[in-house]
Length: 481
Image 1 (cartoon, rainbow, N blue to C red):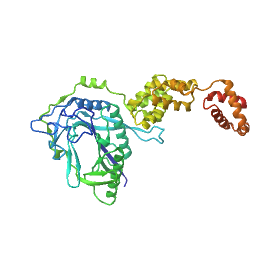
Image 2: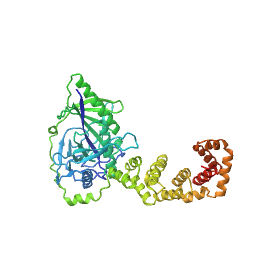
Image 3: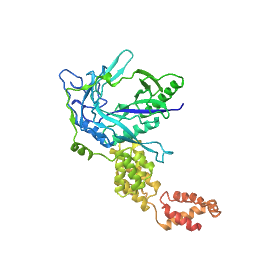
Image 4: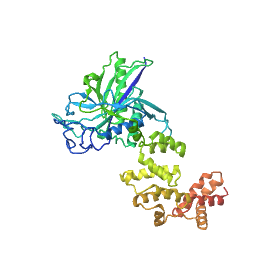
C-alpha cells in the first residue's frame, strides 16, 4: 500500500518590538542573564499586564500581508501549565478569538536549475495569534539554569492547515515566510537566536484516503534545514512502523539536527489539558477598519510580487530577481540604481555580484557601503561610453568601494581611460598581427575565433588601455573578415 505524508507547521516568531508583550522591560538578546525583567515578567505579587500595541500592530500587518481575515474582536486567555521557564505557571495567549484567521503563504519550489523559476504554490493558514514567550532553560549535568530575559517577549504563532506534502515544501514555506517578515520589518527571524522556531505536525495516510492519520509533533527544529531533515526522518520512521505492522502513537518527539536522531518526549497534549480560560486582567481588543486601513498603508510590496514586477517591467533575469527579493534594502538599492540611469540588467549585475562580493569580503552591512546607486550609474556610463572596459570597471568598482570616490575620479587617478587614438590603436594591432602569424593563418584557414588571441596581445601591448570595440574593428579590417 502506498502512503502520503501530511504536514502542518506551527511557526513561532519573536516580534521586533522595543519592549515586551505585557511589560515595559526591554526586549533583546545577548544581555547578561535575568537583566531584561521587571515585576510583570517575573510575575511578582500585584504586578498587572499592560498590552503592547506595537506587537498587536505587527500581527495585524502580518495578517494583512498574508490575506488573513482580521478578527474585529480578539481576546486573551490563560494557557495553564507548570514548567520552570514560565514564572506565572501560565502563558497569556489566545484561544478561540485570535487576531487573524485564514490567509495563505505563497511559496516557490526549486526549479530545474537555479536560473529557472520553480513552481509557485499557496499554503493555506488556519490562524495567527499573539502570545508571550517563555524563559530559557540551560541544562547541566546535575542542575538547570533559568534565564528570564526572553520571558514576555511578544511571540506570534502562525499555524498552517495540514496542507504541506513534502519536506521540500516545508523548507520553501519557512524560507518564503522568513523573507516576507524580515522585508516587512516585523521580525529579524534569526533562528540561531530563537527569534523564529518551528514545530512540525506529521502524519501519513494511504493514498486516496481523506481522513488524517495519527499525528506526531516534532520539536527542537532550530534551523530551516533541520526542519526539512527532521520531517524526512519522521516520515521514514512512520512508514517503517506501519510496514512492520505496528501502530503509531500520538506523541511529541525531539529531533537532534546534528545526529539526525529523534526520541519520544511525551504524549501529545490536547487543548483541554491546558485549561484555557479568559484572562481576567486584560480586556478584549476591538480592531476596526480605520485601524486596519492605517496599517495597510504601511505595508511593503510582497517579495514575490516584486519579483514578478522586476521580470515583467524590467525584463530582469530570474536568477538576479531571486537574489534581490531576499533583501529589501538590496532590492531598494537596485531600483535606485536603475532610476539613476543604469540599465536594469547592468544594475542587477553590479548589485548582486560586485557589491555583494565587496560587502561580504569586508564584513559590512549594506547601509555602511561607500558605493551608492549614483556611483554605479556613473561607472556604467563610463563603460557604455568606452572610457573603460568591462574588466577595468571591476577594478574601478573595488576602488570606489574602498575610497568612496566616483568612478570618474578613480579612472583619472589611476590612468585607466581607454585609448581611442586610431593611429596608436592601429600600431598596436599591426604589431600584434606580426607577432602572431600562426593565429592569422588559422583565421585565414576558416577559424575566426583565433582572433581572440590577437585581441589579447593588443590589450597586453596597450596595458589594457586599448578600446576593445575599436581594436576588434581594426583587426577585422586588417584581416578582411
